[in-house]
Length: 622
Ligand code: WTA
Image (cartoon, rainbow, N blue to C red; front, side, top):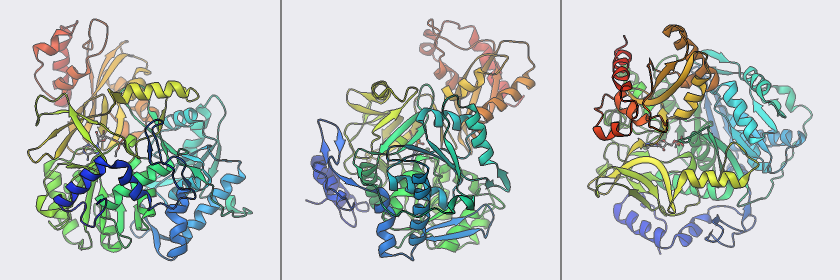
């Protein structure tokens, strides 16, 4: 039975045959691909229906699979090529050097008392040491929790406290657009906000911590349900949730999707512009590409600093073959003079990828023509932190390229669009079956209470056995899937996933604010921007309150949470039971007409005229 083929993700007929086989015989399909992994103990079953567990009985080590294996076979091959904030700042780390870095960090962690199952927080810039730190945790069975270095001390404190991290790994500083970010200072501030026990800080760019450390090269054997990492992400309600992934099943899914969808070969040079603070930086920077033994290019800076040709310069100089980026970055770059890109030789490129948010047609066409010169297929990959790896992506077939279509389900994935009027209408995207990349659990509020966490997971994500993605989608006439974005209260600002609840929490703490509601509005560059509707409690001036709100968001979440619009209104639209009708505000902010049906559940109809007037004032910048 066919489970793999060189043309599996290229030719429709071969894709169809493997897809059918993978759905009918999904145990055999995943057993076939799990042979790529070096286990120290083979799995006794692939998927155990009774327990819901993948690769039961198996054991192995993720770091061994991603690094040691290549450090033995191809020690001199570049593993990571780093480019810094300024052009010319470059560091090349071979597989054998990467292994040395990892073993130094894992030895320091061991010396600090870290054992299998302990949580280690990582708050670092995009440097080779950050990836080495993740793999060092994997090596000793510790669970890593990376926190995006753009998050504020308060956001960092919340994540550390909730996950009970024992160590916090950081750098003294990060450089971005010529500015220095005081990471160590942020860590110290974060710890001062934590009430209970605080983790010890280890500064990895401080040479002294490596002195007198005897390097231990052992790897710890991990079972298939031992956890590899926690990553916080925003849900449709409440505070960010810690999504937990177990190691071996996650690796199986990330590596198999990467192999097919990016047609990854060991001589590829792969450049992904994401950050280790997000899931893409886990699945498709730290794990799958290294597992396949590729050379990966990482970039610490800003694509437009000091000039908007940083990506093109890196692609040209490193002969990048696979380039994976975000619609926001592309929207920003296409606004600049075309000579920045025309003067560069991008002929090494083979495949282009996009992730994080819906890509619009204009940007897709520019990506295809200006960057790929109509030679490179674009994979618009749809997935989530929870899914561990890509769920939907178009085939790598130049003849069948269509803008903005995420296309086909990955092998072994059976999606279903529910609540749609008919076959081709917008509905809710769900997944009907199980796959190895699915997160194993979540951490929320009371991490010790596993039962409560399981309940929250079930309530948030499952309905009648279906996995609810929270996104809207529809089929086009070729039965390819198009995803339109979130249907719930999650905002997607520049590909950063933030919930309205997080914004509202931070704003409600400001003196002078009685209540507020946040909704997304379309934004030319960022995809979405935040529109804040605020009811005042005191007679504070608009200007003063605007500044207070902006600073509360900066310190509560981080610079990414800058609100683009703040409207001061008399009242928020509510139901009789006091629930804020955000969808009404969303329509008003998008300049859509409210229908009578919308207004029928509204108990304070008189609020609407004032909200509409203030929205217009705000959008017109008056
Ligand atoms: C959105 C990022 C349209 C979607 C990997 C999803 C996309 C959320 C796409 C997950 C895409 C991601 N087209 N929308 N190709 N990729 N999204 O957890 O709304 O940070 O639910 O994972 O991003 O964001 P997360």
